[in-house]
Image (cartoon, rainbow, N blue to C red; front, side, top):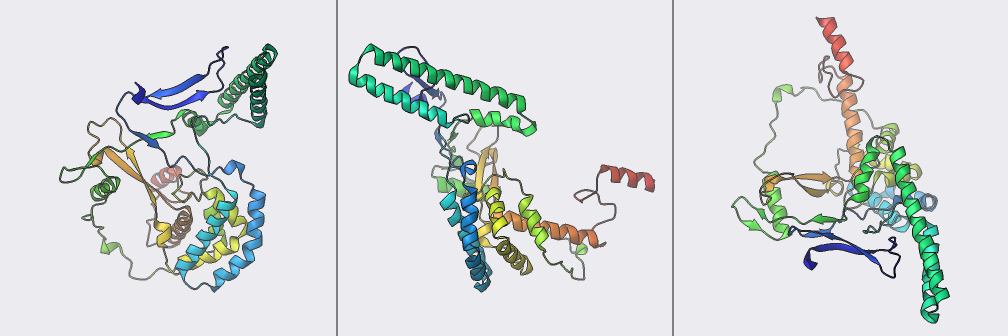
Length: 365
């Protein structure tokens, strides 16, 4: 049984009314290898001192603008902006320390109560009398009662105020910090691969086959060239500020919260960089790097076959901003050019809905 016990820890909140501690643990009956989830340790944005973050950016802003204007290579500009933001993140934004005992309801009052309880335990160990032990029992009961009360209040408030997608927070409160290790994977020659690098190559060959070719219908190509409009600051601002804050992060952990905060102070640098990139049709290789996440499909018989998995890619958030700007440019160009889209095209067009389709049908019929 000892080999099946995972993720054990002492529950300091439980009151047994005796001089004993409660140990909580998870029993894994199947022979499943569990490992730490590297995606858990994201940045703790709730405890960031954003005032110091903004002040530091403000002090270095002029120096960054001068250096950005002197750099001629677009690749070097991308590297410089990415490096500057990462250096500031290292100074003011810290990683979350996720563990089995992480608590959403914890506050500083419990820290003080823990210190008081520890102090009384040390006093009792020195004197070993009944009065000191009675103080320990009294303080321990007070500490555990306070925890029970705050946990109860936190859970009731959460259930009363939960709205729409926030209900999925329940899963966040209860999910394990460990994930299942990848099974042995068969390649095209039915050979089982054990090493991680070999598994990755097998997935790449199975899911990104080199035989796939994009077919272009030359009849749909326009003879004349299309004039693209110049990128304006409002487009860059909209692409950054209206991005989802809870997007899954790439391995560099540079979220839209950090990018939006940096944009408020050094918006001139962002505007210069993105204007030059889109004007010169440059797509940075650094921003094209992504983190592949392998997800297991449910209810499959044999998980050694690569087709029983699906892969998602976590992209760079700075690259997502560039893609959103290009998407806005494409949408605008398609709307003003009558030869690109049919007048009756409704899907994937702004300010076109099912009501417009019905009105168009009624008018034509």
